[in-house]
Image 1 (cartoon, one colour):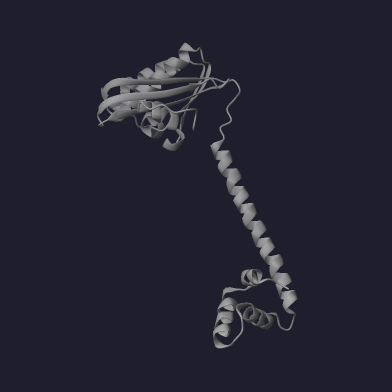
Image 2 (image 1 turned 45 degrees about the horizontal axis):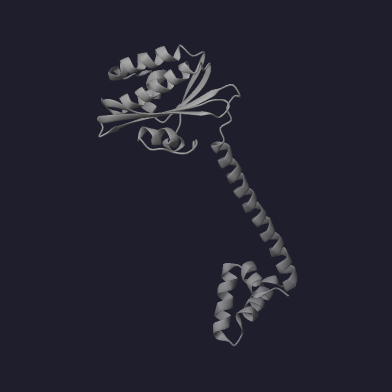
Length: 220
């Protein structure tokens, strides 16, 4: 015989409501009231056949929910995983200005194929946030050149700077022209450079360095 918790789980909401009404009207316990209502729902079949059918349906729904949760977890893991070519160096850059415009600070991280990390964190004079982002990119490119990097994947969360360097949307900021030209000149000294925009939450390490804060490990 099914337990009260299972009867509750297998009963539909309208059946649970009917059982409560029946319980209030008579001297039946909650379990007895549920059995009475479910027997009525089962007719002309037996109560046990109804419960068996609903157990199977519930198991199927539980399986589907489990599969959806697992799929969501796998998709999240795929988004969080960054599988880079074995020979590629990877970089992240960020810049800040406080206030904006104001005192600039830059941060960048260069990761070697063997997972060694090289961090950059420095004051960068006075300017606005876009200038700071560009100066952080310059610093990262210079570090890559110093390490004789041939293949580099660069990540940044500034659409202004990345679109400006790549010429996206056909528009470029005149005020940033000299910063863009310097970045492009540095990029020509590397054989293969890719510039990739990422959301800010995936740029935590460089962001922390651009704020003058230390952080342990890459948290991209």
